[in-house]
Image 1 (cartoon, rainbow, N blue to C red):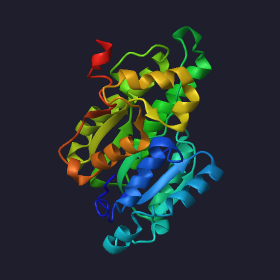
Image 2 (cartoon, one colour):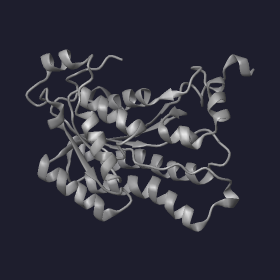
Image 3 (cartoon, helix red, strand yellow):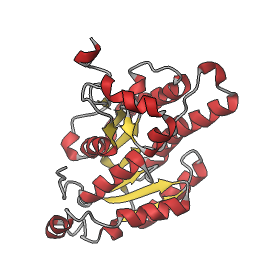
Length: 277
């Protein structure tokens, strides 16, 4: 996949929940394109491993990166990645996160509020404790990440919230999960209007079925095998597919996209494969 190695030169981007799946690949892509990236995760050991992984440039990109990196995006990508452990549902951890970013960088240019959790059970089996856990993980985390980022976010910056294709397409046993993702999704148009005086763009991205560690852990082998048949693209998405959309939406190339939800699902919600007709 072709990357623009200077598109984010000099930009400082936060990716929450960046230790696996879509968050990890989004962080990698942003680094490849010249950004200084802060990644977060709750597990310090896993986070340290992620930072070490992200600090190594892809072999195929090393020559290009070293030739084209600007003064704001040094070739040593290890200097451009910072891991900060913490729980995105805990406002005190978020306060510590943004204090560390302020000390290290003094500002932010973009935020990918990606941290979230899955929850798949019949509505009748949802307990109050589970309700609180999922609301906190998928809505409270996104809301307070954005709220607490705003004092550091530069005017003209960008915010992207990770939602879900399920917001647009009813899926059994996802009532709680979908409701919390719908709440996060609703932030984009509202905050786009509220933050317009600062020229801060706010969008959401709604991934379809995506091959991540969480997806493989949560979906049965039979479900995974059957997904490609209902997607017009004929396959499950990859974290790279989502990362490409994330990088575009956070970049200046998307400067006139605001208050929108961009569905990245291979046509799942909009197109019916011929074999299903």
